[in-house]
Amino acid sequence: MAQTNNIGKVTMMLTAVAGYCDTATFVAGDNIFSAHVTGNFITFAYQMITGSNINSWVKLLTFPVFIIAVIIGGRLSLKAENKNKVLLAEAIILIIVGILAFTWHLEKDKVFMYTIVMMTVFALGLQNAYGKLYSKETYGPTTMMTGNVTQASLDFGLLIAGKFSAGDALVSFKKQMTTIIGFLAGCILGALLAREFGLASIILPGFAMLACYFLSAKPQVAA
Image (spheres, rainbow, N blue to C red):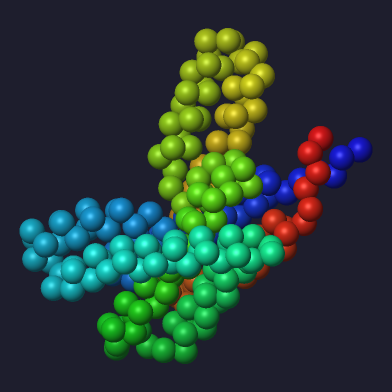
């Protein structure tokens, strides 16, 4: 009997962490996306034309931060004996973010608040690098859902055409739903806790990433 792998659990945790952090920084960090950073183009453009925020230019800083994180994450993954060390690095950064935010009154120091948000962007950049380099370690992209929703829609179309008897499509559909449900659950939880506790709530996905690291580090044997 082959050992059951943990890909499903890892996928669920990674997508939940990404959805949580993305929403938490948006709610408590001046509408900045930390996982799906291209969304910051939209908020920057909107705030620029409406003049609703004189600090809208800060959103553009997420891109160099993200790029640097991906480069470092790629190097760390390829050089480390355990490729999952990049997930451990993400976990440590998110825990530090939560501790710093908890011990500092961010509403009184915008520079520190933006620093906390950029640290979160950096952490999620590491996760993006991991997902791109080791795509077979998860059921799909974990930081953005457009591709997963597209695949789930294609699979659902095949299931309808085959009267829900298409085996491969059903397996793929279940995998995509794991990513989508995980991300949505993370978004909802991130919104609720960020509203109550601000950026300090990011400590929770930090500990979740620790669990994800240990799960992904377990050896996996194909059936």
